[in-house]
Image (cartoon, rainbow, N blue to C red; front, side, top):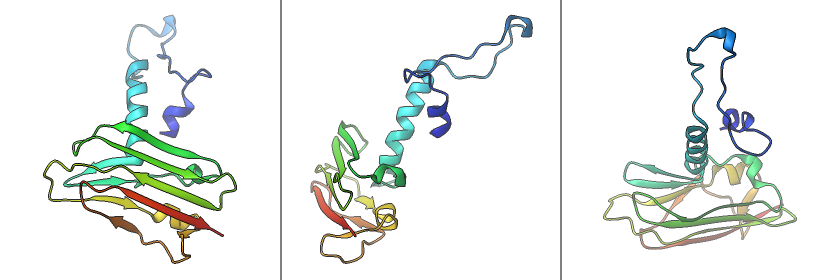
Length: 153
């Protein structure tokens, strides 16, 4: 993901790299600009929400940098194999609290569950609102939403 981001132009788009004329007409192996955009979006979505067999995993690849004060990580009206969903993770401006909301997900008859990986939140010093340690992950039933509040000392 960082490699793709580092190759974007200052305007946030990708250009196709071309060989100089003297090098001939062979390919550089560079992906097209449209393909680079699609791969970038797919990778970002995979960090936040990923179908894993019968389960739907959230925040499994969340980078710690995204938990800075005032940051919001969100997918609104996303599509998945398990039905539409929305996710919103908002860190307070002072960085001392956060709130995670995930909309109810249908599941479409899957025997699995939605699950949220809380490892990165825990590693960044967040606890449950009551101060108890966060578990590595949490699951809940399909057709139910999730609304969690965290605090950080």
